[in-house]
Length: 119
Image (tube, rainbow, N blue to C red; front, top):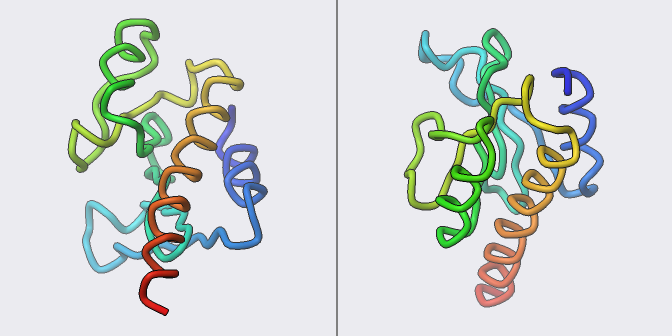
């Protein structure tokens, strides 16, 4: 999936999705586009090097997914226990969409409950 199609897909997940370039003050992060739900990251990638999309995932699924798909590996700059990296150039579009939706739903579920408890 190309970068523009992926960006559009992330934005289509819900009206609550925001996109930002939050790391512009860092040379190595100035091109990192991050997608947020409930104020928390669920997907990000470097626009200048669209070879890894980092996504939140259930810890118990990560090793299985890595064993099953060559396109899944280490996340960029996140915990390997809770995040995975996927190559958007070699991953099947359906897998990339499914894992992105899963990431969005995980983060939204966690922080929607958190925000409700604060009220």
